[in-house]
Length: 424
Image (cartoon, rainbow, N blue to C red; front, side, top):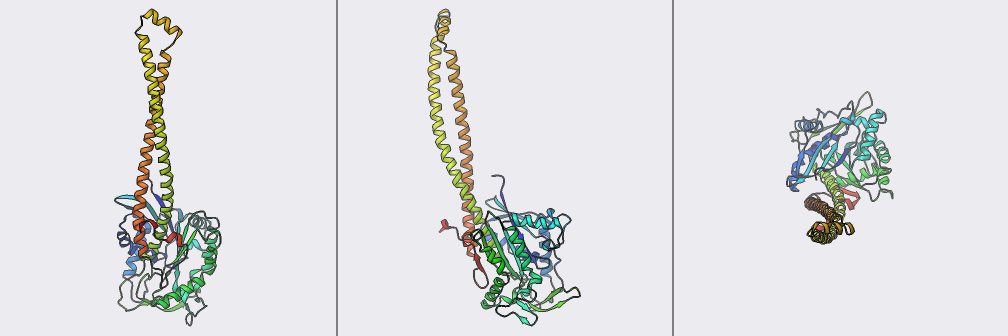
């Protein structure tokens, strides 16, 4: 199986929310996450990967007041040139599937984006298997006079997170989906809002309130069984707290933070959680497809075995007929030539002999072809079963590490996030 299936993950947020920082926090846990699942990875060196590494370098060396900011992903002359962050997964040096994280510029999501940029986002949303929505937790949880109360939303939630715009884009893209999708809400810069279990559950409550329109859309009859929804807070830097805000002359609000303690290192927390859920979902979908392939190929294998048995019987019968014709021809050829010529005039034995020989050759070719197809199908069955076994084991390890409390939650689609049933 030379070609592997590619699954696509799209980061969805406007500019400056922190899509690349979230990817950096995820990437920080990348190798450990896969090693624990006994999976191998092969990573392509792309511009996106270099941007992730640059982002991590900035965050690791950031000043105590976080004055230096990660540069937002810039719009490209041609958005279709974005290769994303791509890696392949496998086991035993065999590659089984590829994952591509695409981190478009936040400018593409704006209502006034260029037509080509809008078309690019629309197509990406239509084709992706999973969506990660970074949520600015400060914008969601803070108002000008302090933290929000129950039933309130942050003063800058719509300005920063632009939930209405995101909701409309996803509604347009998901209007006619025919395959399972995963949506992850990932509150970031949430260090101050996840200190205790109560804080974390409060953050979850406000997220559900802030995105109630989109969550209600996912619960519609058309999507309830197709869309899985998860909330995974990620501390993208670790050890920071919100300090204050300023609004510039363009009415743009900027949040300011500082480290606690002042010399705290770059220490993202729960960066592997979105990755775990993404892989848990995608591998479940992958396995569902592979199990269907396996069932189909097993049925094909059984049919080929039956066909081979039948064709071998036909070949054996053709050989017996050929031997009879050959025997009759040999007897004829032993006759004196004049008698043989007269006999051939009334009873031709050359033609039946030739026809019987052609029939044997034809049946032999058929048997050989069926045997070749059977061996090819058998290899497909074995390779598919190998993939299923490898990923079943990986699923168990991914699922065991997925958090589902203290602000983490599966809101919808447990079917696609379950443990594999046949490994217990």
